[in-house]
Length: 286
Image (tube, rainbow, N blue to C red; front, side, top):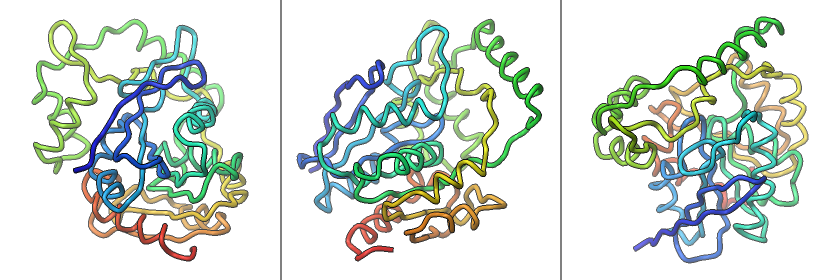
């Protein structure tokens, strides 16, 4: 039986919710994506722990049970990287196998470029950076950010009536989400308020970033990654027009495609993802 434990660690001035699976020293750290939570890796983590690894995952700032940023703050990618830089030494003092999904993969790639000595391997699951998103024009982008933040601060969100209502919301993006997994995730990613439930993530996450994603700068970071890297994609995942170019910039990489699954590989094919990761960790390299 795989035991789990939870704790709160402070990194970059914010309280972070951390989960551990198994009783071994942590050597694998899992980083979730946009509007997701650490608990969504539960099935993957249990497989890794059963194979002899010590596994940890955490909620990024403004997600799950981790603290939201304070008044006047915002969520920028370098903030996540700094959070990770201060969080990892509190989880383990040895180089880790770091896995990031989607947004978490982008942050982990940035971290790997800057801190290669802290990693044994890197795994990017649907996490080689977002597509270029409109608006690109700087003034329009800034205006969209200002308007979005104003809406978040002035509009009071309506609570969802119950867990089933929250599950229906989740199925808008993931219509095949089964009841057992969906209700488990709802239970871990909502907070009870007057009138029902609200998502635990900070609604500021759903506003436009004031600065557009710069593929050229991100590709330069990918090119500087020294760590052996596994890139995992879903056959029906978020495929980018410049995907091959981005992946090819990573010097020491292996690519694996998981068949018949979309973006949320760790939700719908956790055993396949765990198997791909274990095969990579026991191989001689990409």
